[in-house]
Length: 278
Image (cartoon, rainbow, N blue to C red; front, side, top):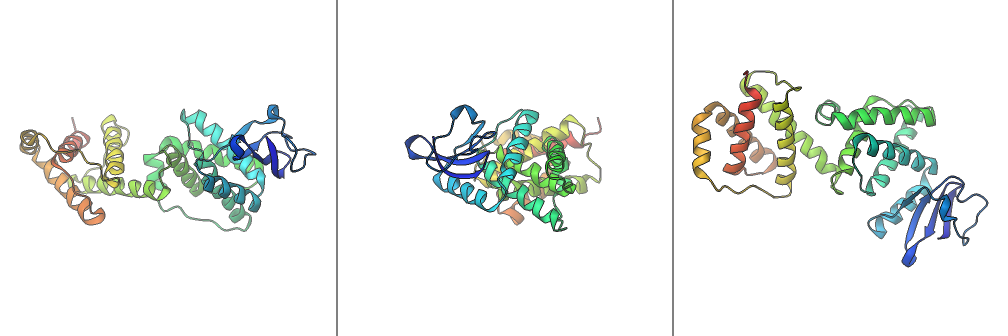
């Protein structure tokens, strides 16, 4: 691998196989090196091969504008998160999360905080990612000396969520979070009760709502095949049906999403279970 650009002693842009550009990280891999020299492959700890040439160029440009140490810090955070959450992330997360963390550190240095309007929802729906993000804040403080507010844990958690969604845009992840919360609000207000967020039925309902929301935004719906089952569930659970109708109207009005009878059956069954006192 031949060096094309050195960002610091530990981070460099090199020419990889088939003349592709690759970002590499490794302790001292570029120490006393110059452009045109080869990198010792045994020193490489992390290689960034972005999904497209455009993303690779954007990462290279970003590293020219921020301290490269912020990429190293982000790499440590992502490695920790992957292990803690027992998952893997798209390489795209390195670009988005590095940019966010670097900007957050800069804002903190300038005394500028940024409120996270979805913090409560993130804490509730993505509790595992949020807990991991809280640890990330500690890693940032240990490395830079800046104690970022918990609002930033919410933002970082969303990057963890988004990074597991095969490159789906953050905007869609935020939209899904709002859609799920809207549906839960309808159920809570319709029945006049507080849902037990620690129950298995609640967890199942939220999981279903998240997958439904992602499918709906991709125009993927479950077709209605059993009209008789729909009629039976409507007859057996009239209150859950009335609540589901409110959900259907909400989705149509706010998101222009039409809900099939098959989806309505799932809504009614989940709503019945999550609101049952038994």
